Image 1 (cartoon, rainbow, N blue to C red):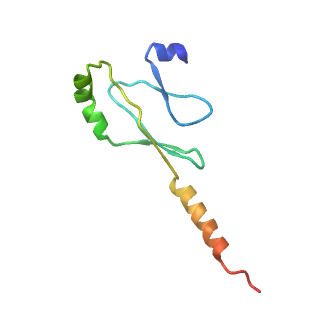
Image 2 (image 1 turned 120 degrees about the vertical axis):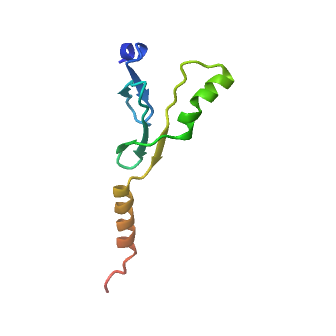
Image 3 (image 1 turned 90 degrees about the vertical axis):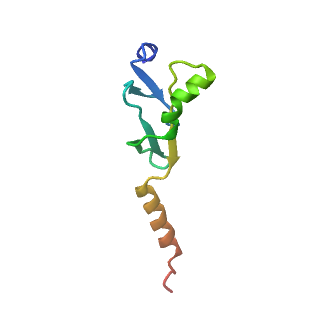
Length: 97
């Protein structure tokens, strides 16, 4: 994987895991992610972010070339949120006497 990364065919993705994750490098398409901190589910975001649009301006202002970025959001997915809410509601129910 290190050789593929050095050849810029893949790039490492920060998913806050104990092992490394890589994606194929595609200069025409950048991928950002949502990561569930409960179950580990990863969702690829299908939208652009202002940082992508600012990349050229940032590169020019600071004199960098070959600029790229990594953007990951961390939180709870809908399924984990629903499970926690259900468990909380069940715990709040009065116990029959």
